[in-house]
Amino acid sequence: MAILVTGGAGYIGSHTTVELLATGHEVIILDDFSNSSPKVLDRLKTITGKNIAFYEGSILNKPFLNKIFKENNIEAVIHFAAFKAVGESVKEPLKYYHNNIVGTISLLEVMAENKVKNIVFSSSATVYGVNNISPLTEDMPTSATNPYGYTKVMMEQILNDVAFADKEWSVTNLRYFNPIGAHESGLIGEAPNGVPNNIMPYITQVAVGKLQELSIFGDDYDTPDGTGVRDYIHVIDLAKGHVLALKDNLATTGSHVYNLGAGQGYSVLDLVKTFEKENNVTIPYTIKPRRAGDIATCYANSNKAKEVLGWTAQKTLADMVRDSWRWQSQNPNGYEE
Ligand code: NAD
Ligand code: UDP
Image (cartoon, rainbow, N blue to C red; front, side, top):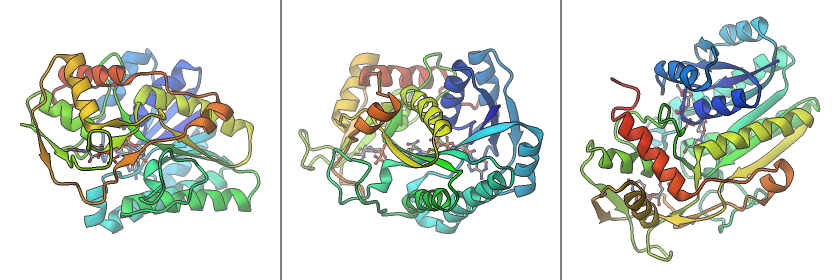
C-alpha cells in the first residue's frame, strides 16, 4: 500500500517523503512543479537510495488523478499541494481559491470515487487569525486576514464536513507553525521563487550575498526585544510529525486537528543572532516599520500532538539555522544551476 504525496517536490513534501521512506512507507509523489523543481526528485533518490514513483500534473486534473488511483494501491493521501504566498493571494485571490480549494475538492472527489478515505492536510497556524492569544490551542476559534489564510480555514471546514457526512473518512488537519531548516545532507531545502517573503530564506540569501540586508519589520511590539515572536520548527521535526499523524489517521476515523509547533517563541533578533553565532556570518539589518497584517506573538501549545501522536519537536533553533545555512551555502541558487 502506498501513500500519495501531493506537492511532494515542494519544501515540506520533499522532507516528509524522506521520513516516510525511512519508516518503511511506499511513496508516490504528484506535483506540477508550479513552485518546485524536477531536480528535487534526483536529490531524493540520492538521499534515500530509492526510486520514487512520480506523476507530473495538477490536482485540478481529475482524469489524471483517477489514473494515479487506478494504477496504484493507495491507502492514504498527504496533501501538500497548494499555493502559499500571502501577498500574492491578496493580489490574485481567484488563483488561490481555484488552486487550493477547487484543487482539493477535485482530489477529495477522486479519492471518494476510488474509496480512499484517509487524508492528512497541510493547514497552518494562520487559521488562528489575529485575535487569539498564544500559546495557541486547537480549540480556539479560527479566522483569516487574507485569501491564502481563508483557503486553509475553508479547507479545514470542508474536510471536517466530509468526515461528518461519511463516517468512513479519516481527516487530519495539521496546523504548521514556522517551518525552517533543511535536511542535514544539504541536498534539499526551501527554494522560493523571487525575493523571499519569509524570514529564514531572506536571512540565508543575505548571508550568501544575493540580497543586501534584512529588513526587520518592527521593533516596537510588546515582546521581550520588540521584534515579532514566532514558533520556528525544524522541517525534519515537521516531517516526522506527518509520519505519526498518518499512523493515527490510518487507525481512526473522523476529523482530527493538531498543532505542529515547537511550543516556544523566538524573536526575529533571536533568530538573526543565533544564525550569526552558529554560522559565523554577519547579517546586516535595518529596522523598518511593521508589516501589514503581522501580529506580535504566535506560538503553539503542542500538548495535543504530544499526548495523542507521541510527537514533540526535537531540534533546537541552533540546529535549524545551521541546516538552513548548509542548504543555502551549498545551493546558492536553490535548485537552479
Ligand atoms: P511548496 O510551494 O514548496 O510546496 C507545494 C508544492 O505543491 C510545490 O512543489 C508545488 O509545485 C505543488 N503544487 C502547487 N499546486 C499544485 C497543483 N495544483 N497540483 C500539483 N502540485 C501543485 O510549499 P511548502 O512550504 O512545502 O508547503 C506545503 C504545504 O504546507 C502548503 O499547503 C502550504 O500552504 C502549507 N504550509 C506551509 C507553511 C510554510 O511556512 N512553508 C506553513 C503552513 C502551511
Ligand atoms: N520578518 C521580518 N523581515 C522579513 C520577513 C519577516 O522581520 O523580511 C518577520 C515578520 O514580521 C515576523 C517574522 O519575521 O515577525 C516571521 O515572518 P514570516 O513571514 O517568516 O512568517 P509569518 O509572518 O507567516 O509567521
